Amino acid sequence: MATTGLQVLGVLLAVAGWVGGALVTAAPFWRVSAFVGGELVVAEAQWEGLWMSCLVRSSTGHTQCKTFDSGLALAPGTQARRALAIVALLLGLLGLGLAVLGLKCTHCLGAAHDAKARLARAGGLVFGAALTFLVPVSWTAHMVVRDFYDPAVAAPLKRELGPALYLGWFGLAHAGGGL
Image (cartoon, rainbow, N blue to C red):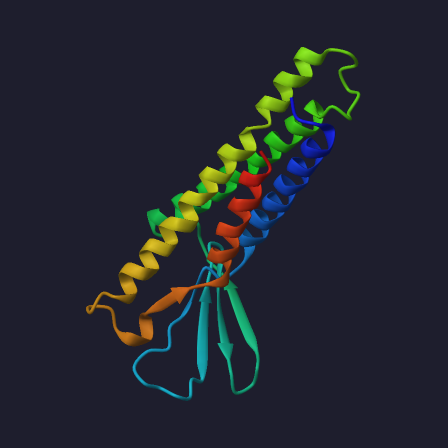
């Protein structure tokens, strides 16, 4: 078994990954406007996430965000990515709870070392949650890259990978490091 310090470090990394995943899920920066076509001055930029889209006007500096009106009116892919992100967050929360209960430094089960070891191993759900969260992040990245290089997509409709996707991959690394 690992030492107590390594267990605590692993749980702290997993918590950092879970918090990162929660922030990424809520952020509207999954897809951002791509400035292609030689325009030097851009009046507006668009950000899109799982729950809302935002329009940023560079002339005034104002950002106007609008949540998507209906979950049922969204494309099936967006609904699936939302669901996977929520499932990943719930799995991660369950895994974190089990991992904390299974730490050597917690006293919830007294001297039942076998039960604590099983709880610590069940905390591996955090890794499953990280892999589950990898799906919507990478799926979105694939769609953005595919549409960016598609000549049928007009230049104003092209998007680039947003910062939330990079944070999602970074959070996956933290949650995976939590094992």
